[in-house]
Image (cartoon, rainbow, N blue to C red):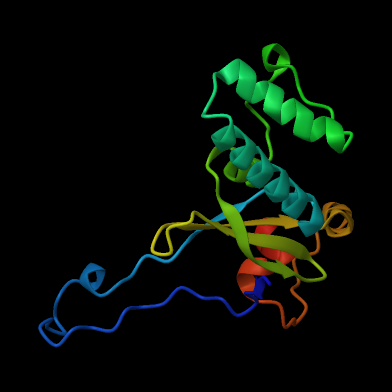
Length: 174
């Protein structure tokens, strides 16, 4: 089950007794996450299906004894073929303009550990298997909000909302 991180916030670590209250602020801060704002995100079901396929690939790849790249591509093609998914020819692949969440899932082996879906934006928190490792949050406008925001760029008046600032459409439309 994924956590909803609507009220997710970075936090300060507690100061140890050995630290002076006059020590530099960096000595009291604890890194929490990096927040990316993307042009577009797919729905959670899309990414969870991709995670499932990536897990299936990893298991098959390991079972095959970590074969060559060509054999690994064959394993991926078989998994995709079962689900009717078209695999891009490596010769035609363009690394720019790719979906950041898909790249983190497939390229880095990260998984979505939390999500926030509100009327304005979609957000996913991704992490490696290292519980103390980095976490990335990726946020994008919902398609209908993107259209509305483009049409009303002149209107900068902010309506009161219960959506945290970092998940509001206005944050992405600045």
